[in-house]
Length: 148
Image (tube, rainbow, N blue to C red; front, side, top):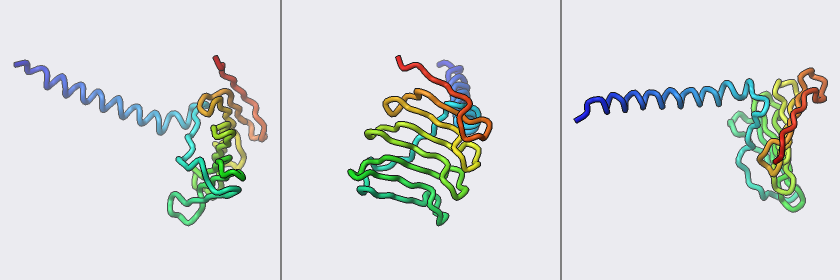
């Protein structure tokens, strides 16, 4: 019988736990703060809604609407908004075209003005993003990604 196997398994488990903790830390603290290409996913919502309708929700139970979904005349989702910062105003906006996510606009600084625009290809690939680093309301940093 090999007595080293349980010790090695214990070391391996500790290593896996440390790696998992590092991944969670990076996802929660590092990526949102430092990654220009970080795009929050829209909340799960029904792609079909009331024609020309708006659905609102209070996801935190605070009594304030922090999510809205807008639908066109055929009941297809065209835009979603969310107040991620819980400051009483929407700060993240998802725009849809032909049922696919087309662009995301985000107020990353909480100023009430969008300062990050992310354009998607086929609803999932980042094609281009623009950032306003000066507060002018207009992008001064633009990055374009290849489309292979």
